[in-house]
Amino acid sequence: QVQLVESGGGLVQPGGSLRLSCAASGNIFSIYVMAWYRQAPGSQRDLVAAVTNGGRTNYADSVKGRFTISRDNAKNTVYLQMNSLKAEDTAVYYCKANAIARDYWGQGTQVTVSS
Image (tube, rainbow, N blue to C red; front, top):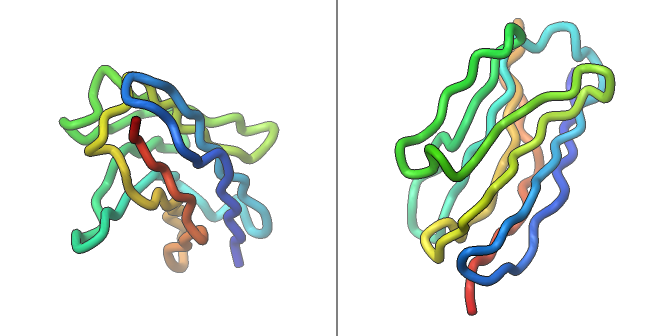
């Protein structure tokens, strides 16, 4: 089993920044990819960014150049640094761990970009 706990969401003005954190615990050695997804009201859950155990990253086109995913293996934590935030970035952000046996999801954290 893997447990994921997200933090760092909140309300920010357009153009501002936030950093999300996702702390993993449990059978972390089974994880090979960590990712952030987001889901806006009435929309499907979409990939925002992902990072492999080897450090390879992948981003949605809509966030390239603004968001950065990183991982601290010593802390078993993945981060999503979000800069130049736009209203359309408003969503619930979910952390996901791809593990050998199955995938795991965090509970989600709300990000609201509004003036």
